[in-house]
Image (cartoon, rainbow over all chains, first blue to last red):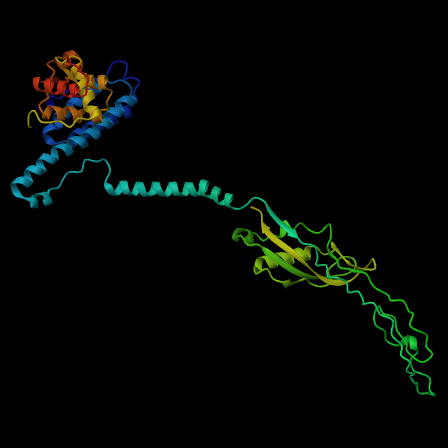
Length: 312
Length: 100
């Protein structure tokens, strides 16, 4: 039929007045655009038919949906009409015709645009997942509770001087050469062994009866107010799941303060754990329990162990 | 266009046929079928054209004067005798017995 015979459909009563102008215009443009992209034999018929059916619809949204649906209908109709043509051409002239056949693209967007939108969408989803779910999962992997235990200092047994047995005096008489000079050092100034009474052996000397003096030595260690070891678990070691025991050598005065920089006596195998243990030892200066000898605090050096372990 | 061709049956096609089988002599526009079948326009019109190409439907323009009627003329579809037979067979095969 001739296009000039198409009468623009009037808007349905009670509908046109409350429709936004752009919506009505957009719907009509969609229908006309779809009809013009349809196969030429059906183009005018479909445009008039769809505009007539559009006039029976009320509501801006329903009319807009109708227009969009017509665009999709055009795509399907064009595809179904193109298939018989291609088959007919192929049957008469061979495959070369099929290769040269250019099928019109009835889609609203090109494939390149759709691919671009798809890629952007996937990137957006990935970034959103990173910003929410995956980060949350990564945090959950790290254990909540971490426990670091400072082992008590190595209690090395205090060397008790072996009991001195009563010397067996032989009957041999030791002759002391007569000296005319007065000895330079009185007997009491002779060097004595620590903790052991001096013994003077000589003719006429009384049997040794000096009591043995022993020292009770208790090594010190981290005191009660020692810093919390959890604060010195290196974060890098936590992330790497490192754990182990570091033996630290600390020299402490009688007030529990460091007198020298602590050193690692035995490494844990992890440099970060060793550093953390040294930081802990330095921070604990003033909070060490000094070594005592007979109950009196004295300066000393001793070792203690810091155990790093991850609580499951 | 070939006549009395086989038509690929889908749920949407059955809905369209069911809309016509309510009263096989009725002539329905696309808008009427859409109201009965609740199909979207993007689905409905290809089916109507497909069934018309297969010879199950015939269509014609409504004979009205658009200016006096106050609306454009519509395209009306009607079942052909072939379409009626084939549609009845289809529904009978599904055990519906629409025209029994």
